[in-house]
Image (cartoon, rainbow, N blue to C red; front, top):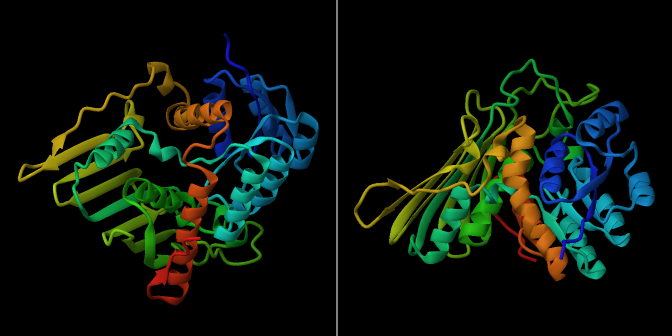
Length: 364
């Protein structure tokens, strides 16, 4: 029996374009796109064979009525769009950070529960093959008792002062800067692999204080880099370093050291089949040795531009779980609740960076 074909509407076509080939790879029918710049929306729609475009998300939800709504707008819109989509009966996949605050994220998670719809957060960096293998090895007990872990996510996107600002520099729209762009993924990887973060101490900075937000009305106020020290519920210590102004760097790393062994993960955005990642492991008194990790993906997954490759290799595996959850009537992880818990860490990081010192992470 052929599986049911679900209809999809995507709101926001910056990173949102990566979701199109990811859903199409699973046989879904992307029927509508929404973007304020309708000329851009039409060009994307024509490229991927999508029939309808909308300038306003309210009109897309009311007129196209997709069964699945993908939210890839600036974070200040996540909460209202998700509540409206869920109330209309749609399942929702939302980009990170899930909301502006953990209270907004909690309201979104509660709305999904009331609507009995599947609602997931797009923590797509769980899904490179090497990260999946690291997670399995942690679950198998390779590390023993975790002592400490460190995570880095560095990109050069705004290392150059001459680049024009975007909404990502405006805390009123973005909620966070580098922590919302990048750090929330590190928070999720730490939580997913090692457990809850219970308190944090953070420092953050803006690369070029002379920058203004789009329109030039006020100085850019969202951080470009941040260093976080955290404590887990287990007592283990973690560090997280993020930057979107790291000239010549474009990588994610996660290292963990425990009573029985150590694991070292690295993903560099470049080169052939970069999306697999690299993993090394050590046990006893031996040094690190490479862990063989097949990608498990067809070679065609690496074809296309960077957004298309990212979609087919890291978002498509999440969508596979998303669709399975819809068929089973249950929400897989990373859920809106995972997004809420990560958001609570962001709230604490923002408070610590503002006033200094350790800040407890709200657990409920």
